[in-house]
Image (cartoon, rainbow, N blue to C red; front, side):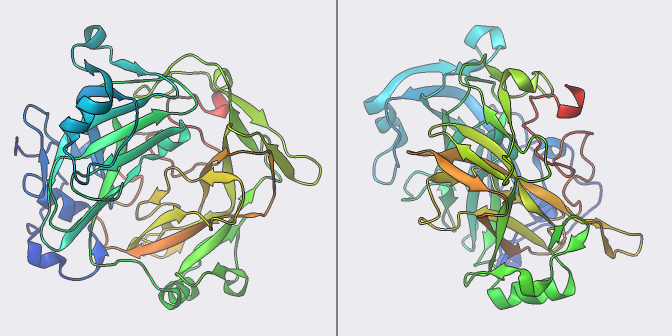
Length: 407
C-alpha cells in the first residue's frame, strides 16, 4: 500500500488525530479524517494520493474507482468466501480501466452487475467504524451502488477495527454510464460509537434552531413529525413546481459520469407535471427525480441522512444517496448566527410492481441527524469550485446534465 500524503491539505494546522480522540460518540469531521490518511485510510499500491480538494467533505471522504472492473452474473456478500474466489465463480469478464479503449474508460451497460476494488483501503482504529453511501450524482443517475467489506455480513458498512480492502458493486438501472479510474461514485464516513441524536435531543436542537422551512417560514415544532427513533418525517413537494419532477427516458446514449454539463437533460429525462389535485402516477420500473416540500438545514455540528419511512409506505424505493454533510442548506451572518431558509432535498425514486399515485405533501422519507466530533473546518459547499455542490439545489439533476436554466 502507498501511504503517501494527500494532496491539497486543509490550509491550517490541526493536532494529529489519535485513536484516543475517538472514544466519544460522533462522526469524524474533515481535519480528523485528514489526520487518518496514511494510517486508517490508505491508498492502494500504485494509486495517486488522495486529492483533498476534490475528495474531502465536511464529514465524509469520496472514494475512487480502482483499475480493474469485473462483470458478474450475480452480486454477493463476501462474509465467508474471498472476493477473488467469488469473482472466479460468477465473473463474466474483466477489464483494465487504465488500458481499456486508450484511457477512455468503460461503458457500464444498463442492467448488468459490476464490481470494482476501490483505491482507498481501510485500517481502522479499534473504536472507529465506517459507513458508506452513494454520492448524490450517483443516486441521481439511478446507479445502484453498495460497498462490500470482506468478512463482514452487511453491505455499506465496516466494523470498528476493520482492516482490508473495500469493493464497490455497481448496477446501472436507467442509463449506460461511462466510468474511468478515479471516478468517485461513493463516499465513506467514519464514526465512533452511536452518533444518532435521540428524539428528545433532536427536539431540543429544533427548539433552538428550526431545521425545516416551508417557503420562507420555519415549520413550527408542534407541526414537525418526530418519530420514535429521533428522525423527522418529511414530505414530497409536487405543487408549485414546473416541472414537478423528472422521469428517466427509456433509451438513451451513455452518460459521461465524470463530465460536468456534458449532456442536454432533455435527451435523458422527461419533465413531469402534477395534475390539478397535485398528484402524479408513477410507472413501474421507471426512475424519477422529485424534491422535498420542506427546505432543510443541517447545522455545523451535525450531519444527516435520509432514510425510508417503513416497509408499509408503498410500492416505491427512494433515497439511493441520502447523506448530508455539515452545513447543507445552512448559512450564517458575520456573527455566526444562522440565516436563510434551507435547501430542498432531492428524492431519487423508483416505482416497483404496480402503478403508484403520489400526491403533494405525502410523507416520503425520514431525516435522521447525527452528532459530529466537532465543527468541520469547511461547511458543505465552502471552498468548492463553482457548480460543484448542490447547496442551492431544487430538482437539480446530476452534474453530467446541463441545468434547466441553460436548456
